[in-house]
Image (cartoon, rainbow, N blue to C red; front, side):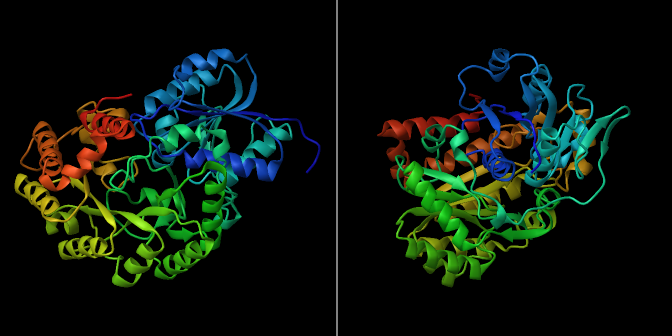
Length: 472
């Protein structure tokens, strides 16, 4: 690499709407890639989830022009806070950059920001590396293919071939740049097993091969079509690092559908057993890709928690609205199979889909109560930017003055979408579904485990605030 000047980089993570133990893996991955490919860099991370002081106040600590580049993370719920951070970051950074899922979904929603210079949609490791390298070499306005760069007439997409790195070429996420104890102490995925379990989150793949309308085509736009996997060897090596450095004894994989590729799952389980780590783990799965062969093998390798996207108790809603491609019978069979192998199960459900009726939502509640689930999540149907429903429904949202920050599927039914219930009635049904599920005698031990320990009480409070719409 040619002689270049030191580059000072600041990453800004706005405070999430709700407390979470989910590690910001995207930013951690970016930092790891930058350090590997470009050598020593001066990198600071201000994490609004950890900071007791608002980030807007923290930014006053820095002098004008102190950073060459400031990167701001955007998701839909934190859109307003991220916009404010861009404005404040411009005082201390020569170049302001936006990235994240919201940027991928609707980059045009940021075009009006006067203090924003570059937008990086999609996977950012390759594009940000080229951007920082250009800054190192003294470029005033780096033109990296696949990014939107502001010019005299506004933002324009830079043409050219984008660099997409193979997943095994990526270093492990640099978790040393964040407050790991903060995140491990707030991870709730294993609470049904024990509220004191020290775990973290990770990813073994990117993308999804399915076409569910509430996610797609955003996932394809962000990661490319289909799913790409790291090798099982690489994933187990990262788990070994996490045990060695952070002392974790559990890991939850946030991949959309880790069980789709059966050969990958079986090899991963073999390598995890051979590692001698003896940790427990969890993951998401479709109900139609979880079969007896992998169920037994995953359980023997330490799988103790599964999240199934069941979504609805009405086959019409599943097939005609969500395009899920699964059957209700498959949900029942998958939950029963998991429990036969000692795997605890959370079921994801949604309420208030376009044209969904009160009767169909009642079917969802009955299904959730009838399944042998340990936990259930009832979210409110929300047409997120980038999903199939977004272009169809955004005019209705605009007419109701719905802002990006209102698209909160935990606690805000924003508008009715052609069913026979109002938004307020849908929200009441959601709360009733949660209460009727968790106050059932079958969940007594689950609640008792939360109420009899300090860690359990703290995590129960985190979950309750999310559902009740109480922010930090």
